[in-house]
Image (spheres, chains in turn yellow, cyan):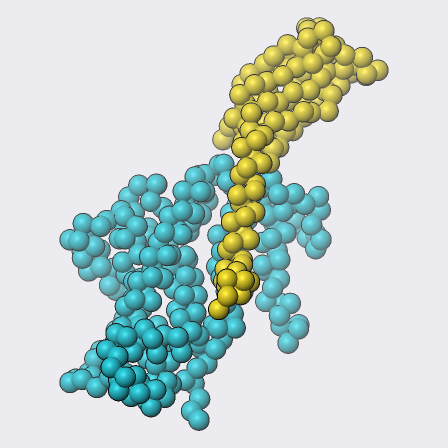
Length: 125
Length: 258
């Protein structure tokens, strides 16, 4: 039996195919698991908001609990580093009490680098 | 036939659908088509419990069981095709042992495993599955189907008993080998009672035990639970689908004469 025939045999081809997919996925994960979660905070008109506090909520056994927070810069940008999570919630809060909707975050793997769509803070408190 | 196939596949479809949506299984009316399907329940399963560890344990135990079965069952099956004193009694003994339920042998099996010092090890989990009587008889039936003249010709050429088995019998018994691989893979993959008794640390648990632990620890995780079930089922289904031709051949070989 030639090598090609052995490779094409389903007992070899299927596990080999699965191995290649798993290897490719792990390489992709290895290249994108910096644990960066970043985005911007804007108001209802789309203008960036500086000084907003962005809170990350980690899932516990029963609910989501506040874990870390960062403050937006002059461009309204924020960034968490070293986030070894795959699920959580993000919310932006302003000093005057206004806040964005709490956004559910679900990642394909732990510590996936993620750039979120802008968190919009509108008029509600 | 198609209707029966569809009916048989409905539970699988429902498990798969629930794993992709996480919807309440008691919802009425139930959604036939998945609404907003996603794969995040599988991600949850991967990280909420030590799934890779359970998977590794199951793979190691299954490989040990399959290798052990191929080794011991071929030897025993070949021996039963030869003539030796009290062969009839040995066959009767093996057949009568098949009537004893595994639950009745758990305590002696546990004591023997303890005496061997392999409690809470992969070998200990695989030990009772290293040879199964029904698979011995599958090999026996397959070996008996090999023409006697072939074996005689091999002996005239000077082959020993082991080489007759390896060079003549096994290449002609591929369906029986495939049947052994599939049956033992599925049995050892799904084994619950023995691994539950023999394992003491969570690091040694296999996937079925992990499923039970998942059920006891996590609440309100219907989607993740069903995703776990799918992940436990998929390897067994893949092996069966890969080898179904040999599986059917192996089960039916020796069923008819002529």
